[in-house]
Image (cartoon, rainbow, N blue to C red; front, side):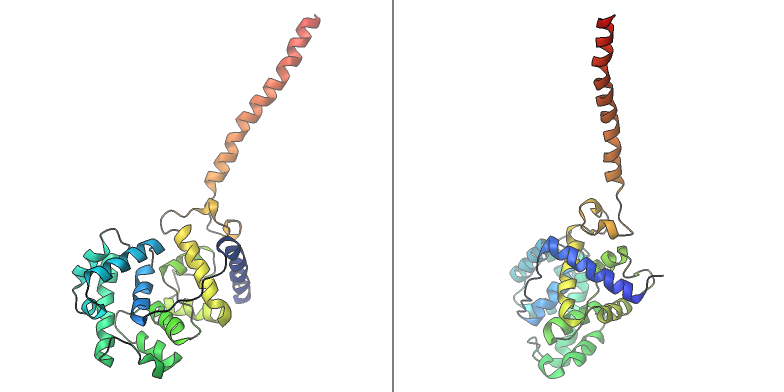
Length: 257
């Protein structure tokens, strides 16, 4: 059984490999808290391009975020598009979350978080219906400066394949608690960003591209059969070269006779 310390070391080694691949994590750019929360919801199992396109459609089709709050999930789902990952689920969560916050604080500005502080902000959002732990952790980290490591499906899938997390037996809350112990606060955002990039780029839900992954040699879930098949194809070619190299020798012997 892998120990806590070994998992923490494995995670830091993964950070170094991914940093060589993707570079430094960009500085966190926080605009309106509502917009930041929407991006967090939309980004699960979606690419950055898909999220940007979805945000653009939401701005075009709804007057403002309050209009989005009072809209029906069907309208939001149609705005996201039929091919958007988990569109129905996200279209249900978005207005539900916005409406609950509005009813508690009678505002769409969300300046109430300044008075709440780090712990209380996370606890408030975690108490809302249909708000998963990863979303409460994202808000607490990015909007209140808390030490948190959000674990959505992308993070759970990727770190699960690496053997660091166990999504089959651990809850989001348990996985987040482990990562918040294993990763120091200054590294948390960087590692989260790098793992999300890997999840979006190569460690896909259905068809992971293990052959291009910088962590494939250390990943217990890596599927490398295509690489082995390519290596197997080289053998017949090598045999042909050997046979070709023997032919001149045989012909010279016949001339000597």
